[in-house]
Amino acid sequence: MQHVDTAPPRLDPVALADGPGRRARLEAAARRLAAITLAGTLLGVVVGGVGGRLAMLLLARLNPEATGVRSDDGFTIGQFTLGNSLGLMVLGGAFGLLGAAVYALVRGLMIGPRWFQVLSVGGGPAVVVGAQIVHSDGVDFLLLKPLWLAVALFVAIPGVYAGLLTVLAERWLRPDAWPARVSGPVALAPLLLWVPLAPVLAVLGALWATRDVARRRPAVAAVLDSPVLRWAARLGLVVLFVLALVDLVEDVDALS
Image (cartoon, rainbow, N blue to C red; front, side):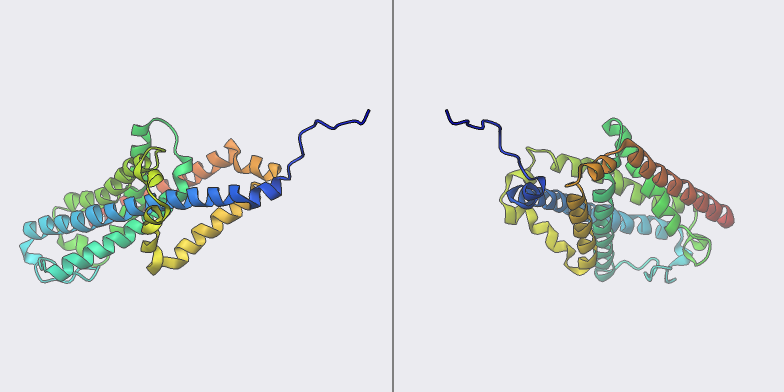
């Protein structure tokens, strides 16, 4: 009697990684990035652009003597034109786009309940970006008083942006949210926003491809999924946060 081998066929993991499965993973990753991109850009326009304009309006009203002075960012204090407002919203959208890229890279490091994720993700950019905005040289924070209000406003803007991005992006990344239900061209359309910043998108794509290829090897996949590596990355972000906080405090102290 002829022997029949009933064992299941052995599957080549490399072949599996190169087939339709990889295309499906690529599309899923692209849909996630597109959803985060749209959320980040919209919030950049609203929080950074509109919110930044309202903050400048408030500070200009409180400091009429500074009207006409050119700020460190190239805007004329107290002068609110349609062109300046649109320019600020475009700038806010651009920074929101970059914020979306950062969020896409670090979202896997979030821990804890949703409220803690919102606070931690919002607090980091508030201090790191705030430390870049607040500086002791130039005219902005020397002329605009009260100092505490000027600092609080421009620290709050990136913090509110990042906190809202956490809420909106994660809502849109749910399996039942619209980015997962609409057709591919519609879902991926927000990626066109990256055209002016194509090199950043290329870097994100290269990182995804490198990670996807590396995961073909079980040993490398185990390292990438290691809790030690994740906690080391979180520790690096904490160090960055502390250094930025020290810099921010020093600048505020020099301005006081």
